[in-house]
Length: 124
Length: 112
Image (cartoon, rainbow over all chains, first blue to last red; front, side, top):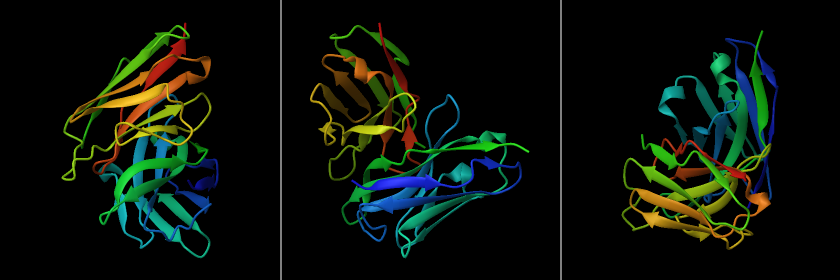
């Protein structure tokens, strides 16, 4: 089980870009056993998968967010990142980075290990 | 997109009594290998979700055996044989078969 820790600003202005980083410990991001992703939870609401990427850089985003989302991985720092452009109040949430454990030749997802989360507010 | 529907959404339980949560998916979660990609999480107040069960019925490391998962196809159940005070929180099912990964709305378990 890997340990994940989110970092980044807790406040973003409307129309600007939200940028978060997740530092992985207890394992390497350059592994074929995990996807590296982001999940968010608006205040008082449920969980929304944003997307994930493989250490090779292959990405998979939620269709409704695809036009605004970019994820990347930095194997030298054992980190991965999220960028969400043109944020609005609807993007205010706790953002969790997550390690998606996968198995098999197609890296079928089994479950997520979660970071502790970082609360991001959107306000001018 | 696979839609996950949980019931009930609120579950008051007396300590020591059993509890059951249902999760239904709009399509089968079975792949060509016969595995069903359904996981359960518990989100305790103020915490991130913690894994309880994956592949329908496999308990995660350290999860007490009072938690069990069952089901197949599109219907799944999480059971707690004897609820304890520490089980309070919101339970989520999640399908991992295909993207977009989707979650149920959550079931809030409270102690009577």
